[in-house]
Image 1 (cartoon, one colour):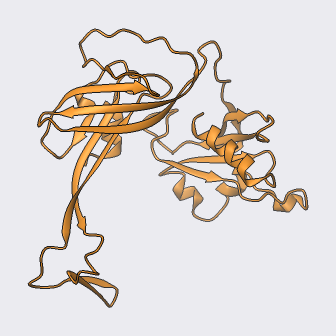
Image 2 (tube, one colour; image 1 turned 120 degrees about the vertical axis):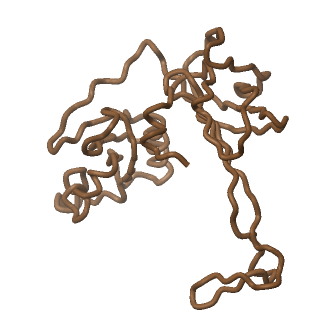
Image 3 (cartoon, one colour; image 1 turned 180 degrees about the horizontal axis):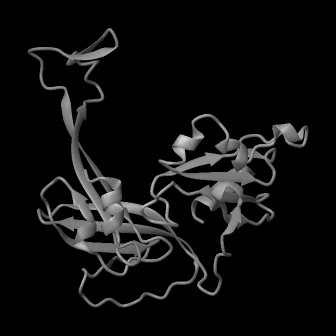
Length: 254
């Protein structure tokens, strides 16, 4: 597989969907029960004279452009080790009919759609006639509103977003320290997400958790050179688990 940095440099994230389709070999789930392998001294050993314990599996997924519907499909965004080609890409919104996605260079028609969360099903046809489906949740944001500008915080940390409280959750903030010498400034290359646990700051200020304290932990300085550190800070760290789960869900699609 290609290095992630190489993929990010070439991937057209604005308009085109990305597709992966890989085949790989792994041990059969029942290889041990069937006596095809043994587990001795914490090592897996293949039993001679038995059928092969390996099976071939597939990994397939379609990634839509963030915050929009796919307008075109660029074959340079197809990553595979199968030797197959993509001949058709289609998608449908919720339970509607399938609609084709034109290939790069072909004319496309913008599909009007109101802001909201949609279940998108992609159907991809390959050069051998095989079809596979992939499902994604896509959030279309209101184009009349814009995300507030980043707020710079100490230590090179930015306040990436703020989730306002409502009747379903108590809200929170998303803080980010971008990877040092990132090849794509302002974008996540290797995100490392840290979610606040129980916040006992109401008992003592010394028990509060924030990005500054996280970055002071041994080893975090080295990690911040390799990963984009993302910290999700709940407004109420002692709120109901399901309510803070809703904060996390909203943060994941910010």
